[in-house]
Image (cartoon, rainbow, N blue to C red):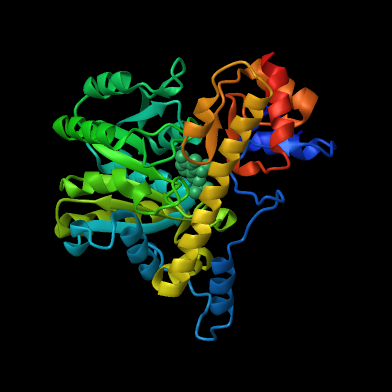
Length: 401
Ligand code: PMP
């Protein structure tokens, strides 16, 4: 018999499993609103035009080779990534207080940050918003941190449970790590206002909590790269320390290339260089060094003014299409007289809407309408188009009446 015969079958991933089920469905009207991946009006994956141009430059440049990158990744990529999230005029960049390492997209950046903290930070408790992206709990638990949650979403108002958030972070043990979604909170689509961010910042700093920002949607939420980095930059402006994980999956459409960065902002250039030396020890036994191609694409775009400008236009185009899907879905439900207040669909920010549908309603929609979404009722607005909105609205209407 096999030495692995004793294995118990593991469940499918709650998010990626939705795509597995979708792929098995032969229905011509099937619709995948599970995974957060951008689709065009025609329902097709999108490769940005700037990405095609950058790739073209890269493959036609005979001076490029396929040598290993350093453990920390491509130097240009790291520098430009820090500039993108912290702002070109960030004092922390000028003072060399930031260590940036190229990692395997957002997930890998979170994991490297988690491993580093578990090894070198005095407090091993990390607070995650409730709810949060499902992978956060697993990433940080396996990194060796102890995961707790803070209240975030209030189902009754379909908004932020701001009082609950302040109470829970207010009673967290001093030094605890706090994971914050920089913008476009996944799965709820609910972000704090700038005034609320300011109160959160004051509380975090007064209790010496350590903020760890997850920035998976910069520019993708509002269409503006600076606006979507506001929360992170306000925490850098106060001179305090923090971590930030960046992903280029959504905002450059580089999902499968696995391009991201982890930045750690320290109090001094000396500490930043100690941090870098230890990050290398975390990375080397995990995967030695990160992949070259995706980081070269990003660096090529960020470094060239014309490509950069073209990127911001394409990025805004994606954000605007998602925002228009919100309005269309809202209007379609209103014109059907679907019971309930659906204004949260137009109010939510980013890729997702937390519909408020329960697991029974979700499974009804899958069974009767071939619409695939996670059981928490989250839908990816980016998977919708003008053509599919009526089908979704019919399904939601039938599910709630
Ligand atoms: N954090 C959040 C909140 C996300 O939504 C995602 C993507 N679904 C990620 C991190 C990481 O994605 P990736 O590893 O593909 O960059």
